[in-house]
Image (cartoon, rainbow, N blue to C red):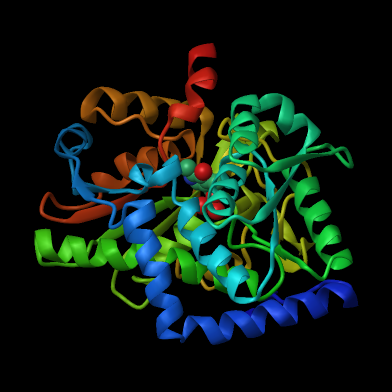
Length: 376
Ligand SMILES: *Cc1c(COP(=O)(O)O)cnc(C)c1O
């Protein structure tokens, strides 16, 4: 599956064979009623879906414009949207009769989600994590180990997320018995399409929930962007509607500083992790580890080029400000990643009328960010 000139499958032949096997299984399962029912069963009973769509009345008053609604992915089991995708892909791995699941992780959120579903289904679990990240995210490393995962330190390159993804793909190429459970809407086909498929529940629910509460479509929707899975999960339900769509990257210490994670506004077209997309020349930086990815999923590159989605970025400082606001005004401690979307939602609220609605995706909770916040 291609997204304009983006996407594709830029990988060696051994990997093409693995990807073909995954694609065939995915295409079969996505139209299989028994498979979908199993997926929905675990989303409901294990993850805790549907997640609420919450009218943030106090935040709305503060922002002084459109009504701000929060899609509460932070209330999912393990604290973020990543578990939706992990549940979907592990069920696929089971259908493929795989017994060993591998995954990459940066901050550790996707590693924890993967270790969680591996524990649930009694699968062998190996998590590749950069050696730098292992030191920075020791709490999540402990969680993964408690859940039974084997955490492998990746020492190549800068020892961070990008290197962990490379390591996982190399391992997949060498091991036909393994299933690679990727954590965002990135990588070679069919991964971006598959991850979107398992995350589109976010947008489908939000659309229905807003209709129940307000009998209308939102005027705008907002989500933050690391690789782009929570955002594409929200966006996909609204892409053909008359709705303004905003994707928010991390501007880090400011675009001019060079220390940011804005691959779309400041990257260039190239190939990374088996896909053609916008990538950054330098290492990515953001205060939130989940946005700290030097590229974006290929569908976002396409939506950027065709201008269906407006992409912008929010600095560390602005995100921390929104983080504090949401804590104090609504009693919700958001993830720093999600705080970027909250900040942007507040910023644009005034451009709309008071009866208009904006949906902001609250992709995760902020417990994991306590150390970062307390240090400031
Ligand atoms: C991982 C993560 C993100 C970024 O990943 P996407 O694939 O872009 O969604 C955003 N928010 C939270 C809470 C995360 O854990």
